[in-house]
Image 1 (tube, rainbow, N blue to C red):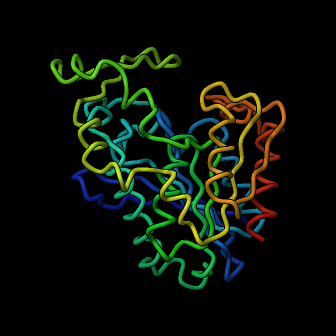
Image 2 (image 1 turned 180 degrees about the vertical axis):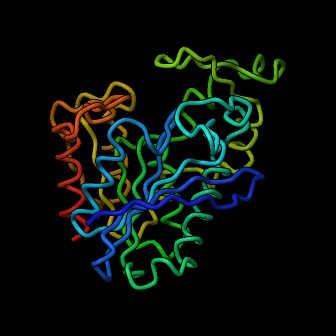
Length: 279
């Protein structure tokens, strides 16, 4: 029997972090996955809940959470009612949020007999592929890392490029969310945070120094993060495994909302690749 529990924990940046955990309480010593959503994402996007349930059915405890500044709130965790928070997000806040979640997992007595604390896996989608790569390199509690359509460079993203002088002068620039039609703000602090922490935030550096099993999964029809970035990651860590999902887009052919009770076939392939890697 799979159960799902919700939690709220304190983040380091004055905003709470909303978490849910899917697992089979009858099974002991389970591997644990911590899943991080990507840019303009949230933990309940599309088919992520189905994905969590599938892992739990395979005796893997699955934790997912909303980054504290992703634009959601505790009462309205889907989509982006808090654009002010979204504009004040940055990469180091996301790394801090992930650390808070990892700490919480290790300190939470609810899972003491359920989880194998020597089999902790980070999975990051898209932008969070970079976040989990960096955190896995710097936190020795992490035993495996998986990126799904992960980016290979934060410095080349639209959120850290463009007309920097205008951005600095205006203090903010906006990105259209094609699905919700919101103009989503990026305050200039995002760029300043990146520049001030550039060495830490260099994905190539982190991936090159990884000493744990590393799986890279990418769709060959991804037009948001091109497959070249997966090849870069694989090249920088020659011990990594690269799985290409044929005819899969950036979200492995899912969408939001996802109204089916079954995973999209391409996301199912992703789960199977992850299961083989973890087990």
